[in-house]
Image (cartoon, rainbow, N blue to C red; front, side, top):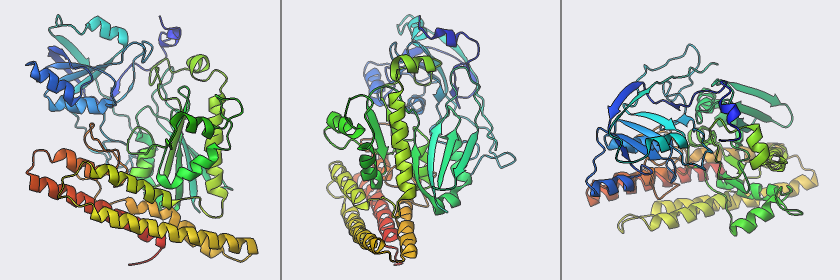
Length: 509
């Protein structure tokens, strides 16, 4: 029996659910499909097992999101999905969440879902999902003796009510003994210009997405960076993701914060020793609130947290008691996250020149095309990417020289306020250049052509999502058409990088 079961039995928690799974009753045979990946269905097919018209039983893991599991099951003709987490992953709890394959309110796609505003009629994915705890899965048994079962599911769509800024964000996820309410609290600090956002939701990025859509123009003109803290502490080990121009700032800040796990060391020293190389990840997923800010609005972003394996994630056992006993008994990791978060914001708000390094961005893009080149047909050219990255690197070096000149003028006491403002605007707006007005093909809401979610959950690329989509979607095309589709996406990314370079230079072509 879980030692925090008193919380689950208190009668004050929200019943387990998967948001955006439609209402309905399913009666069909049950088939166990392992993790629900394409390779798992292929293995079943080789054994003569067809899941069409069946309920599939899926264990959570192997990097597939809930929505990814449902999407693949739907493509195989399954009528419903039973998703469970194995014992040890959720301590016997049931993981709540959403199965929507996207972000924001699906009834107001591309605009803010405010009271009295336009809303689409409810449609819905024809496939149903239900979630199980590990003990429930044991009762089902995952054995051939299961012939058929009935599932009753329901869907509830929640209606949302309603100079330059650094945005600090942390969602308050209302699992456990709270109602599933969603609203936003904002307050401003006059000097420095920091805006603090609290997203109250268990539905990934929904409230933040609606807010971004409602404030898109002002964000484009004023937002310097978005600093995200979602699951601040889940256990040991520091992890971070960022857009590349913020890498060096993140590294410098972690050198100033005491490590909570090693006496006399900084966060950076422990982090670097564990990973040997720069372990900053990128932000191509949609698993937290950075998604709308970066992938729709083009705001440079950072996401930080402690601990990767979170056994009570989105369950009723994600409680103060569990945190105090297991994840952070002395709350020293919380202190470290808060220190990094705050120092990042203060550097961005207080420094006369924004600490953005686009040389780092160009180097990262160069690494991306090296990986991409290994996946392409011989007749597909990377020349548009190579030349555009060279242009960005050149612009970044010019900015680096300009920064040195302005620093010297600052020391002499020269009046350079207008020059500083112009430079900071260019540094801030360069990320917006990676946005494309048409967005990803078939997923137009996602505008960022460098970092965004690929349509295939098994894509080998976590960057250049448009190119990744062309690679994964072109398998049924002729070789010539496949090459043309991939080449077109390469040109699109090349033009986006050129836009960023042009914004960095501040020139009109």
